[in-house]
Length: 456
Image 1 (cartoon, one colour):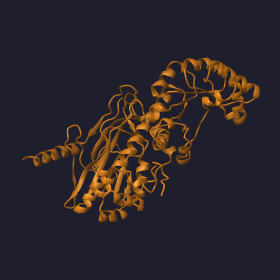
Image 2: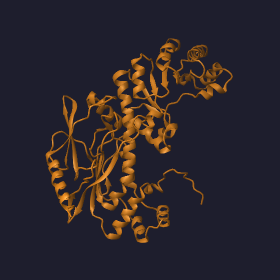
Image 3: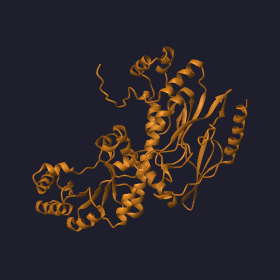
Image 4: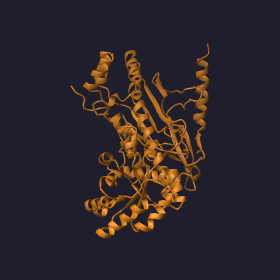
């Protein structure tokens, strides 16, 4: 039968979006009759360069995976072809998520070592979530943070300009393009050029025209006239195909002669700040939309140079987070059931040690700003606001994901409380994340126990 998905993840094969060793371990657990409850914690060991904070994103996609987890005929047949045993495959047919989970809501600022997601379930179920959880939350948070930095720069130094995601064509695949559009909206963007993302996530969609439109007509004037004839006041004309200033003059003349108050013009090359100041008096009340390599650094430079613009269209730098293209999200076992009780567990590896046990994260405010966070044991009484919220209980989804608009508002509210020294786009200060005395004592005790176990 010919394939029709062409590399896209579908509901039929979503459960296979995992690393082979997850399934290998699951089969081993099954055959050894070893399926204790276990707690896994997802966190960022350290933040990317020049990131004083991260904006949590991607949780809704992980919750969907957990809620719909199933292995159908297609996935079972594929695993059978790759040597998995019949009794294990029979078990997978009945597998669903039965555990509990807590998470930090999307749109919340998070910092190093803080669990964004903690899952407690039979180890076969919890183990399977590792790949999808790291993939969706790490990428979502990376792009939401990049977008939030741009929004923060505009809010602090600009005049509330619009920000539109222009990056789908540069994204590392269709899924990345879709998720980047969603995450950029969470981070404070106005909308996206990606029509599919608009349809799936109900994000406002925007677009202008390409140079090819201009080049396909005999003259620039004819190109503008045809576009305005088709789209009227909604027209945004690209004016830098040939000569930017002359393009602005022609755009103004066409609008006047046709009697249409067109929306605006777009600048896409050259010294954008200088050109914007030159063409602004020519186009008058038309909006100026600025694209071409925009990111938080270039937007700040544009504003500081006195550039005139009503909106920016970041693309490549947004969807690939060019200056910091990765964040080290990890998903580690922190507790496991032994003799009917949950026992804390941790890694001791140099540079990769983990905090043991189920945890809580509390945020302490001072004078309306984040002052510090405390990571403690789950049921520990700590000052401040608890960040982790229940999302699954007894295998049931108990969390209703908010609208993207509400998540976006959470991000903007979060940014108002993050100290400016932490929000700096160059060399930000490190936010104060503390470990509670009780958790630190548990670390010391567990380290001693583990080191004793390693004695010959």
